[in-house]
Picture 1 (cartoon, one colour):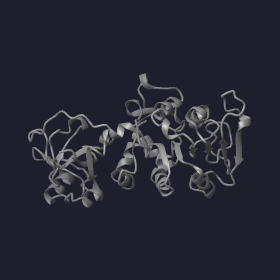
Picture 2: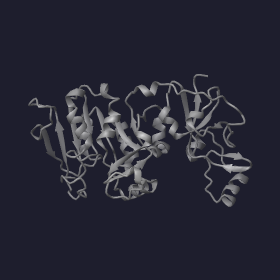
Picture 3: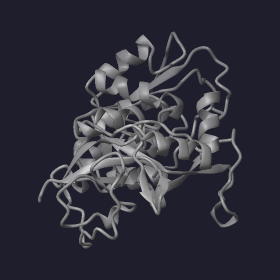
Picture 4: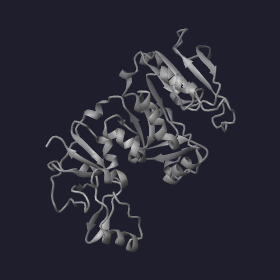
Length: 346
């Protein structure tokens, strides 16, 4: 899916992107040790058709779960796209197989009416959240900041899907910097197909899947410890003044690709936000985010007047103070969002 569709989803609030079981299985296999004797809560899915509910109910005994709770927003119809017309919703509770057939039979699943619409911010949903140890779901992209803030406020562990652009949100980046949230293992190729009928699919002919849209830049966010978080990024390039350009308004070098981080550079470096997929807090220190007000807060200097004028009048582009920029052959160059890091092992 193009970012234009994400923007549309954000404004239209039609951001129900149903996750494929294969993507859930591929990610959650890395967290199995975390689930033993835990209550798992999936609070942004229709529980009767959700692949999150399917995964946890069919793997309930294997994971050693204590209880599974799922809620939906307004939806009381079995149709996947029931337009959320109902003003009330339901929640399901499952406490494991009772008859020994290793299948979550309907008689074993408790169905309960909610008084309200099932919004994750409602008192009823919050009460269910309080019972949970780990939250696993694909929350609405349009409410991602608010959703994560709630999980943090209630001190919950979580594995959730979001877009990598959320990393540059001030509230989310603060949590990243403080090591309160990090990226999981991710989707194949940084993209996945989600079931959604609202938007046009821009996938190429070879990458189309019937009834689905392709979304690029999706990632898993978590605060559960995983082994990849402790693996050093292998570096092989040496620093060369000819190859790495200093920013004009902050004392750091620009690194366009994570794999090109120099092995021997001790100072600050600006790296793409995709670096977080390889981030090991024992190897690197995150200093800040080099965009707008976040940049100003860490000492990124405002544009020099002549560069701001050039950016606006010659390049016809925005010139936001706090954004990192370079001069390459006398031309103002503003890279996409950069995270300022430093190698802790030098």
